[in-house]
Image 1 (cartoon, rainbow, N blue to C red):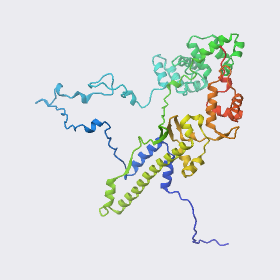
Image 2 (cartoon, rainbow, N blue to C red):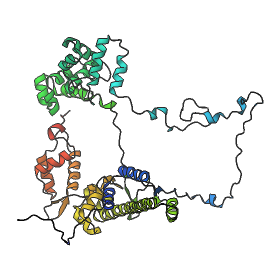
Image 3 (tube, rainbow, N blue to C red):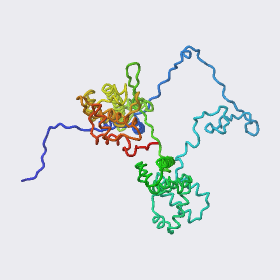
Image 4 (spheres, helix red, strand yellow):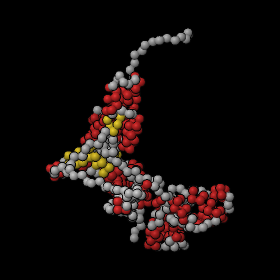
Length: 484
């Protein structure tokens, strides 16, 4: 066999992902926040792309349209200098220029700032957390330098719940101290606010809080210290038998324990709350539903007219500059078309969802119908993957609340009469049954399955348990409450 190089022609068909097509697909699956960042990044990179000027707001008051034009111009503030020293007199200084409109307590402004005006504290980079709050308390205790080092090490090993994420041996090895010294400083830290901080588990946190409230060596303290497992399962009958107390006393003790905070550090969390901004709004006007895309906050893009005019001056530009501008002009036009195509696709998908799930928009989650991606894809003439990308990280504001577009797709569950019910509708029915149950005799998964079977919905007990877990509903033993 002889190895040699040859040239040959071959005709083949294959899909080539151009950079523009990749960009369009990426824009399609971006959420609202990521889309805003992508628009700003493209504006910074492409000189041919710019943000269009906002449209002028037309007056809505009919009287304003017919009112004569006000040609009066307010007189500017005039300040004069005193001859000789070059300084202005007190009466001539416009103090409003120096007013602090952000300070609600002290201001030279003639108008009082509104109640929702931002404060100086709103511009702090990060809010003080649990460690800063505890360290501030330690500075008032006047500890010895060695004890302060131990306390700071303990504070640095607290997790987000306020629990100590280190053993006494770790403290001794890192700070070179005895176990007695480590335990002593740990008790000092545990005496700080919030009660229960620096505990090693929930049980110790509850005991510290009960001790702070004066319940040491009482029935609530005994239940937490010796019968934590029975407390978790709410087995009040066995608690009464093992503690020798009556059911009424046990119920009162459990009520005291329920007032405590299991995770004392959660209230000092610095995690920011991310609010959902809907991508599309659904309004009901009369008997019809209206779809409106949310374009607020998204910059309106256009091709820069200055660079287009510069590109037309071919004789004055070198070939390299003309090629650069042409390439960026094509990219800018493709980017704008991709954004418009994204918005049109979202509108089409939402229009199809409204057609398939109209009963949901009328009556709520209980009227949800089975729906899969293929149904919407065939309805709007697109591929399933396109529908999947459009519905990811997109939210709709509906008369029933804010829902992710993926929420409207649900698998079908057969009923006794041959019809199909959406899984979300069954979850909603399980939520209703649990909410209406007798808390002294909560419904088991098997009982819920039987009740659904009476409504011609065949759901196995394991399926009920799976749906219950997805709804964050506790098992029956954790929902049971004793009789009063």
